[in-house]
Length: 171
Image (tube, rainbow, N blue to C red; front, side, top):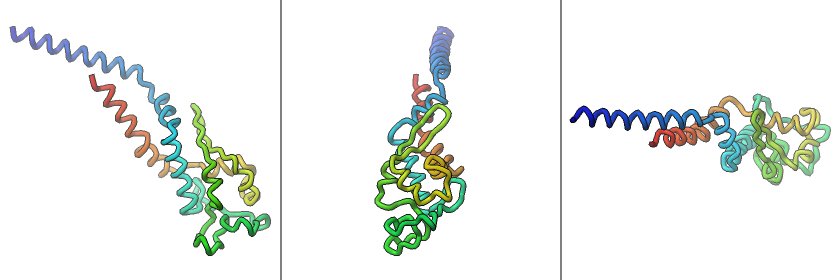
C-alpha cells in the first residue's frame, strides 16, 4: 500500500512540473521586457537616470562633455553655461527652468527606444555646432552608458522578471 501513495505523490509532482513547463513555454521574455519598459514608473526611472547624468556631470552617454555654441549663446539662458555663479555649476546641464527636463517622454518600441521632448527646438538653438539636428541632440543625450544599462537591468527589470518566475513556479 505505501508504494501506491508514493506513486500517487509522484503523479502529483509530475503534474505540477507539467504545469510549470506549460507556463514557461507561454512566457516570452522579449515581450515581457517591452511590457516592463512601457510601465510609466519604469520610464520615469530611466529618464531620471539620464537626467541625473546630464545634470550632475554634463556628460553625454558616449562620454563627451556637453558644450554650448559660443556664437549662439544667449545671456538670458545662462543656466546652460557653467559660468553661471548662481547655480554653482562646473558643466553644461541643460537645466534652465526645468521645462526641458519635465517635457521628456520615453517611447518604447519592439526594436528602438527614444526620448522625445516638445522643448527640444528651444534648447537646440544653443547647440547647433555640437548636434546635427534636434533629433540628433535627443539621441545623443538619451544614449545610455554601459553602467546605466546594467543598473536599469539589475534594479528595474530583473526584480520584475524574478517575480514573474516565482509566479510561474508557484503551482
